[in-house]
Figure 1 (cartoon, rainbow, N blue to C red):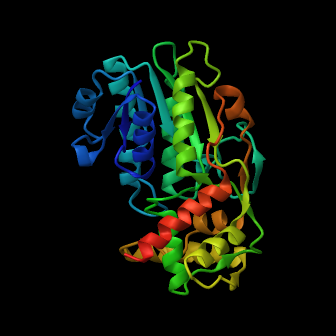
Figure 2: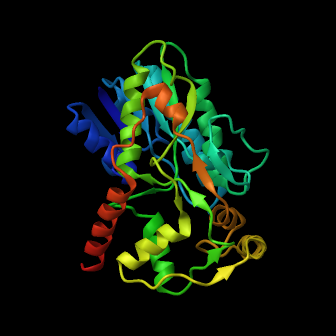
Figure 3: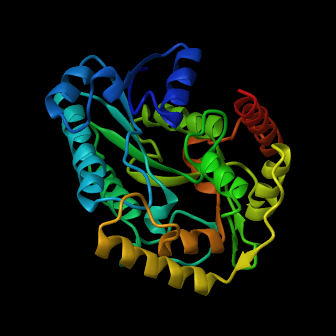
Amino acid sequence: MRALVTGGHGFLGAEIVAQLRAAGHHATPASRQSGVDILDRVALTEAMVGHDVVFHVAAKAGVWGPAAEFEACNVMGTQNVLAAARATGVARLVYTSSPSVVFAGDDHLDAGNDLPYPLRWLADYPRTKALAEQRVLAANDPSLRTVALRPHLIYGPGDPHLLPRLLARARAGRLRIVGKGDNRVSLTYVKNAAAAHLQAAIALAEPDSDAAGRAFFVNDAEPVVLWAWLEQVFAGVGIAPVRRHVPAGLAYALGGAAEWVWRTLSLHGEPPMTRFVALQLATSHTYSLGPAQAAFGYAPPVAGKAALAETLTWLRSCSST
């Protein structure tokens, strides 16, 4: 492959670039750091010349912020990527989506690919990622085969978001277990997420690929009990376990109130709780790997225990520097 990776200097993007190069492929990381902004269609098209595969990883993530920024990066940026791919003759496109695009607030238990999009979303990130995913899948045709992957809660060495934020809150005594604390989730080790992208891209090389035009959940092989898993992480870096609970309904109400205050007063930063975060922390999210295994042979290369051990080693090294 001669692959261009948008967001190629980010957490997941950099791992995709590394795995491509390790497998002998040519990989070009494209990001603002390298002078390629997905909102600049001309620069993006120029950067895409000579490539036959695009991994579209770049996105605006987060649970709070101006809607226009999410629209611009996630929707318009994706449209620019699709247009540039058409203009330069790219044959395959792998899009990094999210399980949140089909999250309506209820439990997902060993969910398959048949989950519908909700009628409404509680945050602009899942809403705009869903709009972008739909455009990517609709663009699939014989000249540009597309697929969307939905890794859930990506973690591992180099994680700039998930675990560092949770650890900071735990150290400050500001983290609470939302609900009963027995909810199960599917996590995605960053190396497994990247491997899924490469496996999907290879499958798209087949003209009659079962992966083309479809969205797939990709995560680690075994789900975990979220708060028990976090307790292992906290213990591994010398943080006391979180024991205090807040009822899910109360957390949801507090999130709604905080959102109203932040919007009304135009406060900077993000609220300490939102409705979307409250529901995400209180519900189960586990996903079947069956469809991805059948369509493109997805097999997570790193087991959960090894992934946790590698992550803890990295977290300890960060704490000591």
